[in-house]
Length: 185
Image (tube, rainbow, N blue to C red):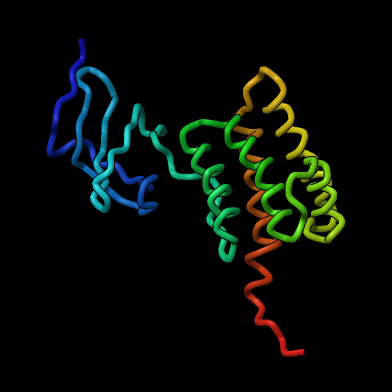
């Protein structure tokens, strides 16, 4: 039976800490005798990161990028979708991206408690979806429906593409307009 051994010095590793989002180098932590398993301790926030090889990390840094000037409720949901990706919870990330469309629509003036199709059409009809972007919004709807109503689990590729589009949509609606000062009337 393998046992964990505390070590002041283990093979140094540079990584982005999923807890504090700092790029760090650590050589302190623990290793499991007879395996490649290691636990590194972030020198910035003191949280643990588990590795099984030089290419694995749990938790991994959140996928995508933070987006500025997003209302808190919408931002929190987007960050949740990103964090789901970091622990391989791809179905949960897809579901969060689907829900994100509804929250964006409501934050832009859509009525609450409507059908999901209503929110998709609202975003498209009011110009919140960029040109040629309607099929992406519909893709999020369809993937979200698969995640909700079918037995199969979503894959990394499914969640990654939805997260990328969600990030772009948030930048298009919130971040980019906030970069240009409002001109006086």
